[in-house]
Length: 113
Length: 114
Image 1 (cartoon, chains in turn red, cyan):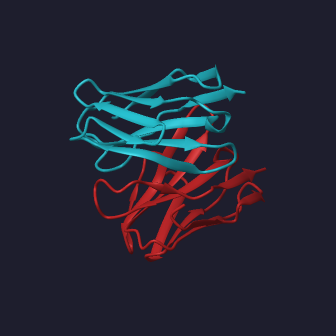
Image 2: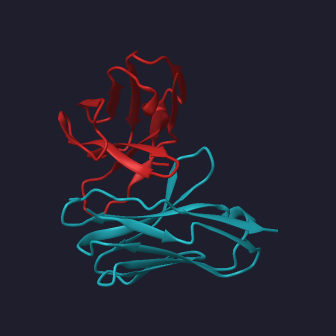
Image 3: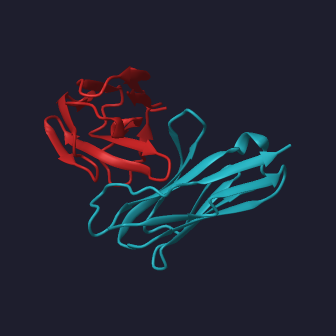
C-alpha cells in the first residue's frame, strides 16, 4: 500500500453527534479523496483535495465537510451524524500526474445508531 | 455523467480456468482506466492502469485491454487460482463532466474453487 493510514478503523456513534475521520499519507501525494462504499451503490466520491487548503465537492457531499491543513492529512467531518451515513469510508491518494494510479487505505467502518 | 457497468456481477469458476471480466463506460473522453481488486473487509488494491493512448497492459497473469472509442475494457486472468477470489472493480478517470476523478463500477465478485 502507498502508506495510507485511516483512523479510527471502526466507530459506533449516535445520531446527531459530530464525527471526524482521519486520513494520513506518507507518500507526499498531491491529491486526496474520501469515498463511501455502500451495497448497491458502489464507491461514491464525497470530497477531494488537490492541494493544501484546496478542496472540492464530490457527488455525495451533503452532510460532510473536509479540511486539509497539511499535505499528509485529510480530515472528513460529519457535523451531525445521521443513520444514512452508516457506511464504510475509504481514503485514497494519488500523485500529480494525470496517469498516477489511485491508492486506497483500508477503510473506516462507521455505524450511526 | 460517466456511468460504469461491470458484467458479470458474480462469477464462480474452477481453479485453472482462464477468465474475462468486462467493463463498459458511457463517456469515452477518459484519461486512463484502472482495475482494482478488493478483498473482504479491505481497501482496494490497484492492479493495472491503462492510459488512454494504450491498448493493453500486462502484469503477471493479468492482462487488461482498453477500447476507448467503444467504451470498453476487459480484464483477462490466466490460469485462475483460489487466491484470485475477490471483487474486481474498474474505474475510468476523466470524462467531460468528471475532470480527472474516477468513476467506479460496482464490481465483479469472483470465486475460484479449488
